[in-house]
Figure 1: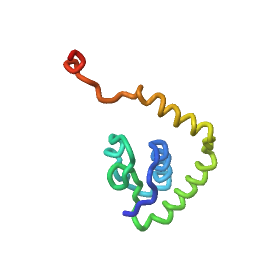
Figure 2 (figure 1 turned 135 degrees about the vertical axis):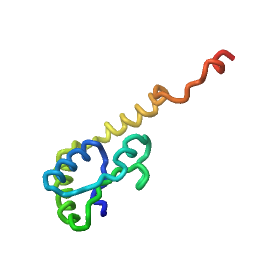
Figure 3 (figure 1 turned 90 degrees about the vertical axis):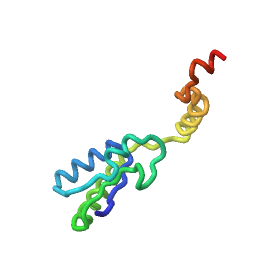
Figure 4 (figure 1 turned 120 degrees about the horizontal axis):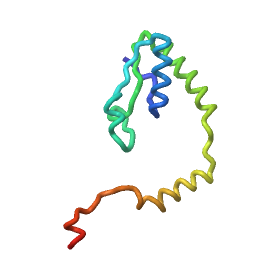
Amino acid sequence: MIKVYSVQSEADLAVLRSIFDSEEIPYFVRNDSFGSIVPGPQIENYNTKAIMVSEEDEQQALELVRMYESETVESRPSVSILDRIRMVLETVLFSWFAPGRARNRTEKES
């Protein structure tokens, strides 16, 4: 089997599954169950989901993926520099709010 697409989101996966199903292209999603339960950075062959097809269906699948990508890239809004600065500031200023390692009661009482 040959990888034709590395999935970036569950929405992309759902759309591509429906496209491949409608075209009757058999496929396999590598790390389908495991990839969705492991948080953190996406590491190839560990927790990254990928759509795999047989060699016979490779060209047709790649063409469908190209068509999907060309339509979705055009419709995605661009992120302005001000939005990027705001995201960095929110991460720096509000990262203390994210849940982390909690101390147990015995450490607090000491």
